[in-house]
Length: 480
Image 1 (tube, helix red, strand yellow):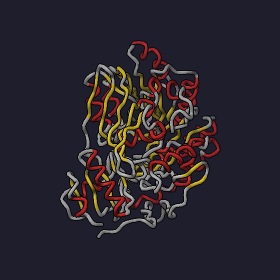
Image 2: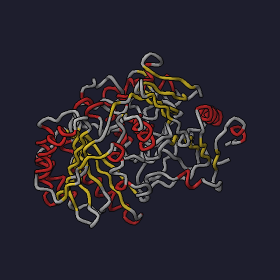
Image 3: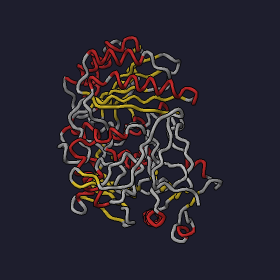
């Protein structure tokens, strides 16, 4: 790897093993991922990104791309290779009159929200404020506002992206519309996104918090939850359910409402039946700033915990599925683990399945096991429990998955994330990245029609005794 050829045209930091700041720069959210890149290129702006993408092409390198570094699969890094790190790129411009924000891709949602909420505005942006805006949005982007305003990707106006040939293009409805469509859920397959322009919406104080029930009553609580949300909710209300552990170690079933409408009195009235049920052992629901709600789950998903995920959308939530949920969560091996039922309705469901690359618009419940623990000695036990739980929930699977919830052993499930949109995505990939330069992701291989373009074979990630083992394909680079 001839780093000298990059130095002349790169303004940011170039970190190699032994550089000051290298260990901090290679660290990812998922503590199971401990990769050592040969080079981390910390970009200061789009021209740095262009320079390093051209460098990768000259050196025949297949880089990883890092923004927030929060992905469950840890694909933002690579052993012995190149990481294009856009996390230093944090400029944001809010146009309060037009209700738009143009944000560079290194921002986290917490940083984005602070800027937009200064104007009383927000857009759909995840559930944990330390998540990067780019990765979440490119995969679709669920969040508390999706009932009112759709997914993060439903609120994008344009993307600035450096394609595999090193060109910076702006993709929007009237310019590169095929790329614009693909970036709305197609993940990091089409280039390095340097900034995104979002539509914003007025958002003031909200009502949210947890209603906590003993996990021993999970069956009763989840049946009530199912009937409550399926009876029909206003767009302003999202309600999730989750198996959690209290600060004192008590296993709990949390029902988490989020009212984001302007009429808080109406919100109190709509939420009242949830608060009356049980009653809960703790009612933490209250009025709060939107930014506080966005940070509500941050501590539960702290940086550096070991993590392994499994997820799929459910075709329904019958009593047998609830019984399985209760049985497994009551035998959970880690008190840090979260098992979530995310309910989607409203604006997110009123988008046609082919209007964006993200196609999953019709299933009410997304089942997500976020296994979290601290000690590497517990890896095998937590991974085995997660896989068993996921397998036992298969009878109710809709055979669709949110791409941002895929683990690094889920390469065989990528088509589940895109359904009938996959072939079109492969064609866009062939146009903008025909050599599959950007393959260190939940990869869509270039293709035309239903046929993939012939490329060097790629080995997909595997989980073995070390649980997460870096995959290396024929084009991997080595220090030099």
